[in-house]
Length: 250
Image (cartoon, rainbow, N blue to C red):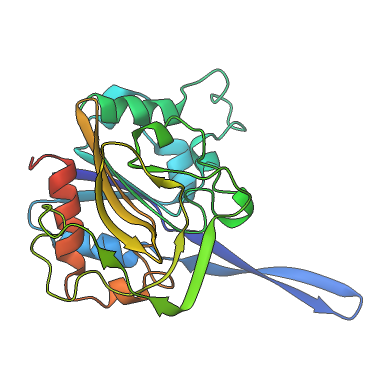
């Protein structure tokens, strides 16, 4: 199974103020992608390719046919603007990568879409995925709000709604791990598989769209919101289950 994974990546810079002067210093890369990428690399039947933010803007597949070289696409904590890099020379006129993702799913592709500060609506609406073609192939509705983040530093325990679904059936008796934040979406879309909630809001859902499938997880697979998940013994099993179901066992 060939998997393309984009998102969960930041560059950090520090701003210093010294008297009347100030300067900015590049600090380093924030590699939030490491837990999930390491889990993908440990799966014997998965060949992952990871693109950070800058590489996504330049190297993301420019057609459905190119994207179909991958059995599944994972998007996590990444703004829609990263896939709309209008400032590049060949961007306008150019392909609409959000429509490419939608057509990819409808043509039989698999999408796993996870939450964070830059997915769904995200921080101050910067994620801005509401109303996009990608939302059309998600099993949850994105709320048209300024900011849909819910911080839970004390932790919140999810409730499993379906323990027979292939994604959740072979997990341990404790169910899904505590989450420490999530994106509050509008609800499950009609006809999709409602798998788990947190604080009464959708956490995990799966659905079929055209000939393809998608899975939405409204928290984060990485550190911070996903602190409990990253430390979870079933971490690799859960994400493998999601990919297996989304790709229909390919």
